[in-house]
Length: 508
Image (tube, rainbow, N blue to C red; front, side, top):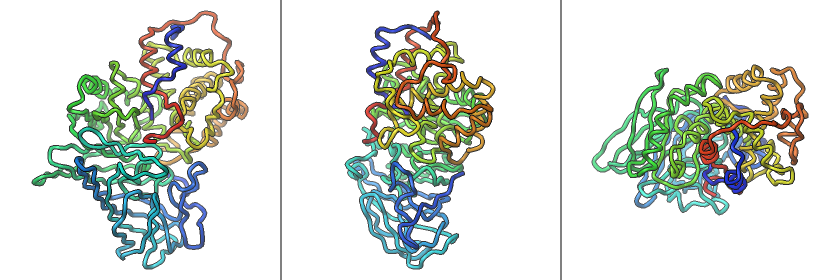
């Protein structure tokens, strides 16, 4: 994810500037024998996700009426009980009207965020778990802990957010640890487009409405599932490797939409370049969506990121596309084990922007590390956040992005290019379709490089102060002569990065 807000610290820098260049274990401890826990065990968000079962597939059917924001849903969940279950939870903010478990009506109660289900017949460990839920409501009116990620637009809506959005339009085990495949059918008024993840399987017209059927065949975290309804111009094509490309840009988006269309058209080119850096593209579809809405962030929805038009308010902006597509490897294919591991997503995507700059004749990643290091004095609050464990609510602080990218370039300096790129590619390959944690990544870096890196990662990820300029920290001596770069290119990189400041979640 990237936000559009530009750091005032970096704005001042620009004004005065130097111009220089498949899933882990899912069963959390049960609250009581036979009761799936109300959370999957994330230390930041104990009630996110659920314990006791593993979802394999979601079949989601929703009818959405843009004029009233009314959503009527029927979701079929297919999975397996990971323990004996006489009761279990699903994450759902809308009101359920009927629940069946393995074909039989089940009793249920609801809290603002949890649907608590009691099957007619208790489940045994390893037994198939098939849950049908009917529900409805006004998503924008549903708030949990005072907030809602649901976005209404001038011509529709966007089910879009991180770390939470699923509960506002379908019941789920809402945590990245429990990935599943998806079939999503969205019924909207005739003449309204409904975009989603993966392949467009079918588009069915009725007298006054139409149904769009999207299929995500590879495992996906629930927060990455999305739909956007509105008026769009849709373009299709294929990458050089034959992968289908589908982009959708707001039909009434004005100059911003024209710029977005031009940058999103570069998606196959960017994917090809990123595949040369990080390994084969992990999915069988690609594209992007740019609604006519100013929601202020972009999100790496699997196969098809969604972008606020604000990213193109000042001109062309390829860097935001580079960032979100890098997440297809780091964040989507390899998802966090817990939300405290977010550096593995945002630091990696931000570093990919730095590498794009370097490989396309702009500022080198080494010069960017040097600039950032010199631009933040040791007393700056930037250094206070421990990005390896930023704390609940701080997952999208600007330091996670900037210090995150700095950490990777420092690691590259420390262990050298051959080992660094082997680490990054091995991480993406070994954890494809699953999850990873920071300790697993640091262990991989030590194994591949043959170096003891405990102190290096402690300094960069877990210490609330500025690292010393030493070779051990991956920081070479200060440059006596500075390389130059066009200031406009540097500004575009910063605007594209759009740091999330203020430590707030999307929609909060």
